Length: 104
Image: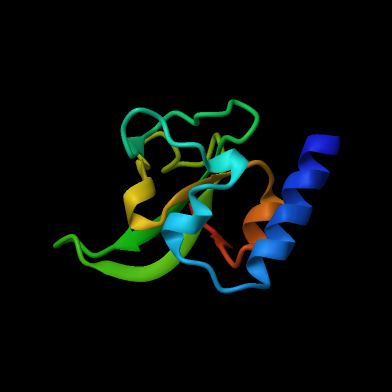
């Protein structure tokens, strides 16, 4: 519970300031794994995937969606930290950071 509250508070502070994606990756709950691309969270307490949608030809749409475990596209969604994608510890944290729940 305390961990989720702290993550939410951090998200509110970060969400209120303009930071570059590289700086956002330095947050404790976005520690990178050996590779910048992963389907497994580096922290099992932070399993929510925040990804940036792409068109079929790989161009970013800029749409920031979060995926919860159990959602239809969760397993196939790959998080690429180098693109500004990230992991969240709670839905509240994802929403506070400006991300929207994926439709499926």
